Image (cartoon, rainbow, N blue to C red):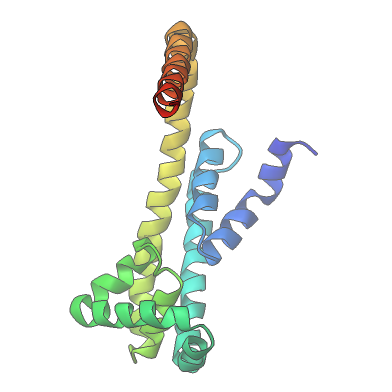
Length: 187
């Protein structure tokens, strides 16, 4: 089994599991694979949406039912959970939509929001909007990255000598700086 058949066979499952567990990386790779023709971009977006939405729903309900126990068991989450609570009081629905874009709050965010007493249907509606926005943006990022890489690689032969000269010059400069520093350190 080659790489292409692996991606074609398990690509959507990997995107789903990755987005369920908080993985922008696998969604970006799914978008990249869509650009390469191995996957379909609309399906990558749909699967990423489903995984992202479901994952945050699970974390939200965990927060509603077992939030205090989780925070007691994992004290490092308590600080971030308190931060989410403060942001929720200030930004309300906008935070629910944006939580998956905030570094370090992707997992603890829905747990803390679940502990806040927000109605499950209200969370689901805003979570759906956030998951849709996230899936489209992140998969598109991978698709565009694939396009940019194609353009770069198509033009690389034209700039091969310039790149080689720049790497050689950087290596020579590094060597000279190291020799100069060694000379200054010696008595």
